[in-house]
Length: 404
Image 1 (cartoon, rainbow, N blue to C red):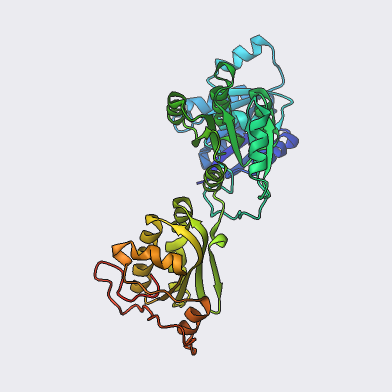
Image 2 (image 1 turned 180 degrees about the vertical axis):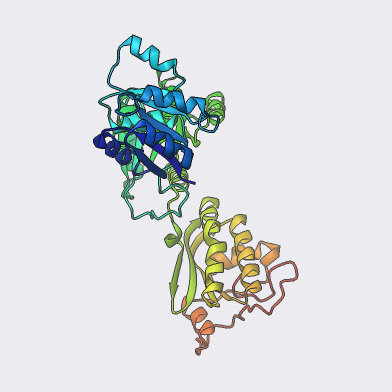
C-alpha cells in the first residue's frame, strides 16, 4: 500500500521539490498551501507523514501543529517540520512541539528522503514487482575493501558479464558512492579497521535509498565468529575468502532477482526445451528448479504438451539433477504433457547408477526426440519409447522412459 505524505507549505516550489523527491517511491502525495488547508486534508486523508512548514500565512506551522496534536485522530501522525532558522534556540523550540524531526531550508532531496525514511517505510516503485533484469542487463556492484586486489579479482572473475564492478577502499568512500549512485548490490569487507564494515552496513540500512539493496559481508573462510555476527546483523549473506567466483555470481544473481531462465529454457515449434551442458552442479540444478514449476504451468495454460530435456552435452551430474528430473516427469504427467529426454553414453551410464531411474532409455539425438513428439518419422536408430501422461510412475520413474 502506498505511503500517504502530506506537504503543507505556502511555497509551490517547496511542494514541487517534495513531490519530486518521492517520485521514485511508492507514495501518494497530498498538498496544502497553509495550515487551515493542511488540517482539512489531514482529517480527510489520514496521511502517514506530514511535512509542515513553520512560516506560512493564514495559519503558521506552530499553530497548525498545535491543532494537529489536540485532535485525537490526528495526534499520532508523525510530523517533520521545515524551518528557515537553524539556531539552537529555534531548534529546541521546535523539538518541544512534539515533532518527529526537522529540516532546515534550503535542503536537498536526499536529505528529505533520509529523514522521511526513518519515520515511514519507503519502498521504491519497483519493489515487490516481478524481476525484469536478465544476465544481458548491466548492473552495478559496489565492492568496499581496503585491499584493491579483492575488487580486481571480482572484476576479472565477472568479466564475462556486463556487470560494472566499482571498488572503494574505505567505508567513507563506500557510503559516498552508494548515496550518490545507488548500486544494485554491495559487498563489504568485514575486516575493515574498527568494525567499519558493520558500521557501514548500519548506515546503508538506515538510508532510504539503499535500505532494500542486497548487502553481503566478506571475510576469511575460517573466521566463523565474524560470519555468525554478520548473519545476526542482517547481511543478505556472507562471501568467504578466498572467493569462489561462481558461487559469488550465483548469490548475486539471486539477491538481485536476475532472471537466468534463458540459460536453460527455450521454446521452438510448440516444444519447451530444458538444455543443460557440461558439469551440472547443485547450483545449476537449484537455478533450474527456480523456474521449472512456473514453466510447466505456463505450458499448461498455453495449451502446450511437448517437453524435451536435452542432456546430450552434459559431462557429469549428481543426485540433485536426478531428483529434478523425477519431479519434472511427475509434474508433466499430471498435466498431460509428453516428455522426451536426450542423453549421451556418459549420461546413460550415470543414470543406471540410480535405482529410481535405472531403467530409463534416452533418445540418442535431439532430432529423434523432436520427431517423436511432432508425429514425424524418426530415424531408424531410435529405439526409445516415449513417456506419456497416461503412464503411471507408481512412486518412481516409469519403465523404459525416454524422458524423465
